[in-house]
Length: 168
Image (cartoon, rainbow, N blue to C red; front, top):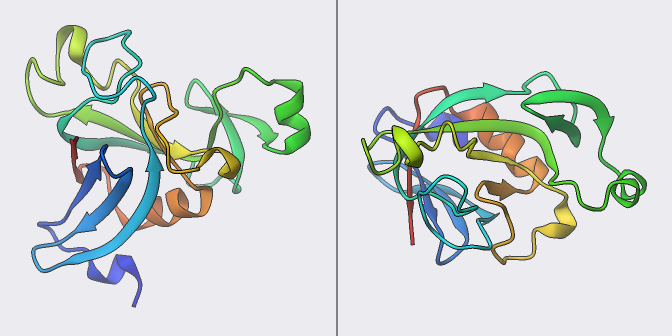
């Protein structure tokens, strides 16, 4: 049975910064779990902090559903490039956003929504990452990085508006 067959209206994504895991939870059970990488600067909501924001969010937008695996995004738009070790060598300082983007919107006013703590305007995403960077440690600039096959599976199994809870 696929994850999509089990997701119910009361389901949500549980992102644990401490264990570097994303769990798909329903009222009955955890139906799937993925390894992730959150911010190397830890948890925090302030704009410019390069931290992963905590609290309740929702999926604000789904971007890249028609793109191939390892498609490169810049400014939420596909560049036409496909990530490879050669491309990585050409651009060693690039923060790679690959395959799919799930853009988060904060739901808690003045915690992760509005003003200088707004997750949407901080451009916080769940997105694909070069698989070799996914080693179980926090390394992002605030986003939640995932293996490319995992972000594609998750992208295909949830809709805009799906709830996300991020905690330490």
